[in-house]
Picture 1 (cartoon, helix red, strand yellow):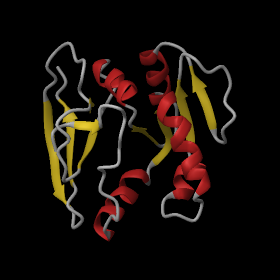
Picture 2: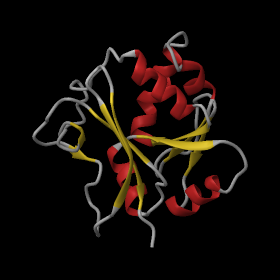
Picture 3: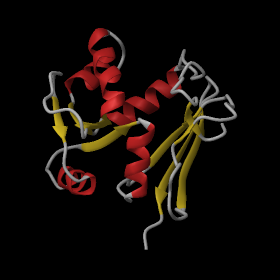
Picture 4: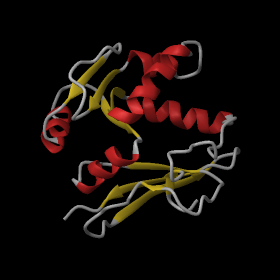
Length: 173
Protein backbone atom coordinates (compact mmCIF):
# COMPACT_ATOMS: atom_id res chain seq x y z
CA UNK A 1 0.00 0.00 0.00
CA UNK A 2 2.96 2.30 0.51
CA UNK A 3 4.07 2.30 -3.12
CA UNK A 4 6.79 -0.33 -3.09
CA UNK A 5 6.84 -3.11 -5.67
CA UNK A 6 9.28 -5.27 -3.72
CA UNK A 7 11.12 -5.27 -0.44
CA UNK A 8 14.55 -3.63 -0.13
CA UNK A 9 16.26 -6.82 -1.35
CA UNK A 10 13.66 -7.69 -3.99
CA UNK A 11 11.45 -9.70 -1.61
CA UNK A 12 7.97 -10.43 -2.90
CA UNK A 13 6.74 -12.74 -0.13
CA UNK A 14 4.19 -10.13 0.95
CA UNK A 15 2.12 -10.35 -2.25
CA UNK A 16 -1.47 -11.58 -1.98
CA UNK A 17 -1.98 -14.87 -3.73
CA UNK A 18 -5.04 -17.06 -3.68
CA UNK A 19 -6.60 -14.65 -6.13
CA UNK A 20 -10.38 -14.68 -6.31
CA UNK A 21 -12.38 -15.23 -9.50
CA UNK A 22 -13.05 -11.51 -9.96
CA UNK A 23 -9.37 -10.52 -10.13
CA UNK A 24 -8.63 -13.50 -12.37
CA UNK A 25 -11.28 -12.23 -14.80
CA UNK A 26 -9.78 -8.73 -14.69
CA UNK A 27 -6.30 -10.03 -15.51
CA UNK A 28 -7.68 -12.24 -18.30
CA UNK A 29 -9.46 -9.25 -19.85
CA UNK A 30 -6.34 -7.08 -19.44
CA UNK A 31 -4.06 -9.60 -21.14
CA UNK A 32 -6.44 -10.80 -23.87
CA UNK A 33 -5.42 -8.16 -26.48
CA UNK A 34 -1.70 -8.57 -25.65
CA UNK A 35 0.66 -10.32 -28.04
CA UNK A 36 4.00 -9.00 -26.72
CA UNK A 37 5.36 -8.91 -23.17
CA UNK A 38 8.17 -6.49 -22.28
CA UNK A 39 10.52 -7.50 -19.47
CA UNK A 40 13.74 -6.31 -17.93
CA UNK A 41 16.55 -8.87 -17.85
CA UNK A 42 16.48 -9.50 -14.11
CA UNK A 43 12.76 -10.27 -13.96
CA UNK A 44 12.82 -12.23 -17.22
CA UNK A 45 15.32 -14.74 -15.85
CA UNK A 46 12.75 -15.92 -13.28
CA UNK A 47 9.46 -14.94 -14.95
CA UNK A 48 9.85 -16.86 -18.22
CA UNK A 49 11.07 -20.17 -16.71
CA UNK A 50 8.39 -19.92 -13.98
CA UNK A 51 5.54 -19.78 -16.50
CA UNK A 52 7.16 -22.50 -18.63
CA UNK A 53 7.24 -24.77 -15.56
CA UNK A 54 3.48 -24.49 -14.93
CA UNK A 55 1.88 -24.93 -18.38
CA UNK A 56 -1.45 -26.04 -16.85
CA UNK A 57 -1.88 -22.92 -14.70
CA UNK A 58 -4.55 -20.36 -15.61
CA UNK A 59 -3.01 -17.80 -17.96
CA UNK A 60 0.04 -19.94 -18.73
CA UNK A 61 -0.91 -20.36 -22.40
CA UNK A 62 -0.94 -16.58 -22.80
CA UNK A 63 2.33 -16.08 -20.92
CA UNK A 64 4.14 -18.92 -22.66
CA UNK A 65 2.75 -18.30 -26.15
CA UNK A 66 3.23 -14.54 -26.31
CA UNK A 67 6.34 -12.99 -27.79
CA UNK A 68 8.62 -11.71 -25.04
CA UNK A 69 11.09 -8.88 -25.51
CA UNK A 70 13.81 -8.77 -22.87
CA UNK A 71 15.59 -5.44 -22.46
CA UNK A 72 19.21 -5.99 -21.55
CA UNK A 73 22.64 -4.44 -21.73
CA UNK A 74 24.44 -7.64 -20.67
CA UNK A 75 22.90 -10.60 -22.52
CA UNK A 76 24.00 -11.33 -26.07
CA UNK A 77 21.65 -14.18 -26.99
CA UNK A 78 18.33 -15.54 -25.81
CA UNK A 79 17.87 -19.20 -25.02
CA UNK A 80 14.26 -18.87 -23.91
CA UNK A 81 11.22 -19.75 -26.07
CA UNK A 82 9.37 -16.94 -27.85
CA UNK A 83 11.98 -14.46 -26.58
CA UNK A 84 14.05 -11.83 -28.34
CA UNK A 85 16.52 -9.37 -26.86
CA UNK A 86 16.35 -5.58 -27.11
CA UNK A 87 19.80 -4.11 -26.54
CA UNK A 88 19.53 -0.67 -28.10
CA UNK A 89 18.23 2.65 -26.86
CA UNK A 90 15.17 2.08 -24.65
CA UNK A 91 12.91 4.72 -26.25
CA UNK A 92 13.87 3.71 -29.79
CA UNK A 93 13.26 0.02 -29.10
CA UNK A 94 9.91 0.55 -27.32
CA UNK A 95 8.61 3.01 -29.90
CA UNK A 96 9.54 0.60 -32.70
CA UNK A 97 7.53 -2.14 -30.94
CA UNK A 98 4.59 0.23 -30.45
CA UNK A 99 4.59 0.99 -34.18
CA UNK A 100 4.53 -2.66 -35.29
CA UNK A 101 1.21 -4.17 -36.31
CA UNK A 102 -0.38 -6.58 -33.87
CA UNK A 103 -1.85 -6.62 -30.40
CA UNK A 104 -1.08 -4.66 -27.28
CA UNK A 105 2.20 -4.56 -25.38
CA UNK A 106 2.27 -5.23 -21.64
CA UNK A 107 5.10 -4.67 -19.18
CA UNK A 108 5.70 -6.86 -16.16
CA UNK A 109 7.72 -5.28 -13.38
CA UNK A 110 11.31 -5.21 -12.62
CA UNK A 111 11.81 -2.05 -10.62
CA UNK A 112 14.69 -0.58 -12.59
CA UNK A 113 13.19 -1.41 -15.98
CA UNK A 114 9.70 -0.08 -15.21
CA UNK A 115 11.13 3.05 -13.60
CA UNK A 116 13.16 3.66 -16.78
CA UNK A 117 10.03 3.29 -18.93
CA UNK A 118 8.12 5.70 -16.69
CA UNK A 119 10.96 8.22 -16.66
CA UNK A 120 11.14 8.10 -20.49
CA UNK A 121 7.37 8.66 -20.78
CA UNK A 122 6.86 5.32 -22.55
CA UNK A 123 3.94 3.99 -20.47
CA UNK A 124 0.49 4.63 -21.98
CA UNK A 125 -1.53 3.16 -19.12
CA UNK A 126 -0.88 1.92 -15.59
CA UNK A 127 -2.72 -0.91 -13.83
CA UNK A 128 -1.30 -0.71 -10.32
CA UNK A 129 -2.16 -3.74 -8.19
CA UNK A 130 -2.25 -2.52 -4.58
CA UNK A 131 -1.81 -5.39 -2.15
CA UNK A 132 -3.12 -5.10 1.43
CA UNK A 133 0.36 -4.82 2.94
CA UNK A 134 2.71 -2.01 3.99
CA UNK A 135 6.44 -2.65 3.70
CA UNK A 136 7.93 0.49 5.19
CA UNK A 137 10.76 0.52 2.65
CA UNK A 138 11.69 -1.21 -0.55
CA UNK A 139 11.88 -0.79 -4.31
CA UNK A 140 9.68 2.07 -5.49
CA UNK A 141 8.12 1.87 -8.95
CA UNK A 142 8.24 5.64 -9.31
CA UNK A 143 11.70 6.01 -7.79
CA UNK A 144 14.18 8.19 -9.60
CA UNK A 145 11.76 10.42 -11.50
CA UNK A 146 13.32 13.75 -12.34
CA UNK A 147 9.99 15.58 -12.61
CA UNK A 148 6.45 15.24 -11.28
CA UNK A 149 4.22 13.05 -13.45
CA UNK A 150 0.53 13.87 -13.46
CA UNK A 151 -1.86 10.94 -13.93
CA UNK A 152 -5.58 10.71 -14.66
CA UNK A 153 -7.59 8.06 -12.83
CA UNK A 154 -9.49 5.83 -15.25
CA UNK A 155 -10.91 3.47 -12.63
CA UNK A 156 -10.34 2.02 -9.18
CA UNK A 157 -11.55 -1.51 -8.58
CA UNK A 158 -11.52 -3.54 -5.36
CA UNK A 159 -11.41 -7.33 -5.51
CA UNK A 160 -12.65 -9.94 -3.05
CA UNK A 161 -9.07 -11.03 -2.19
CA UNK A 162 -8.30 -7.53 -0.85
CA UNK A 163 -6.27 -6.25 -3.81
CA UNK A 164 -7.27 -2.92 -5.34
CA UNK A 165 -6.31 -2.04 -8.92
CA UNK A 166 -5.84 1.60 -9.79
CA UNK A 167 -5.90 2.26 -13.52
CA UNK A 168 -4.29 5.53 -14.61
CA UNK A 169 -3.28 7.20 -17.83
CA UNK A 170 -0.48 9.77 -17.93
CA UNK A 171 -1.62 13.32 -18.60
CA UNK A 172 0.00 14.35 -21.86
CA UNK A 173 0.91 17.94 -22.73
